[in-house]
Image (cartoon, rainbow, N blue to C red; front, side, top):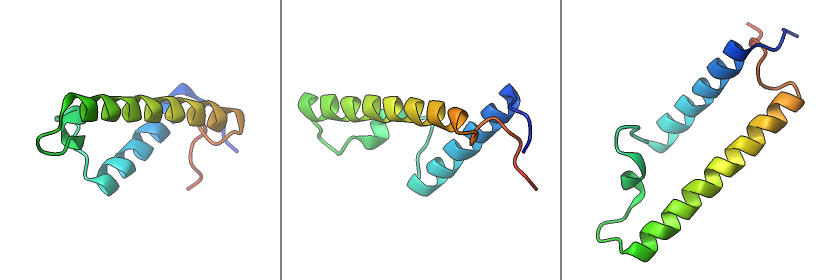
Length: 78
């Protein structure tokens, strides 16, 4: 096991984000607009904004758990 480091957490989080970006076909330049169906009304936009906020909350919880459990912030074994 390696030692916990800030740079290892950042590298790990960016690698995980890149995997999700690739799997889902996200484009970081278009933000949540890429989630909106054509002709979306304000209600749909509000629902998507809420879903994105929920995802952010869930991601933060997972990061905290990952650090507590020693799954984030340590160099990957090669």
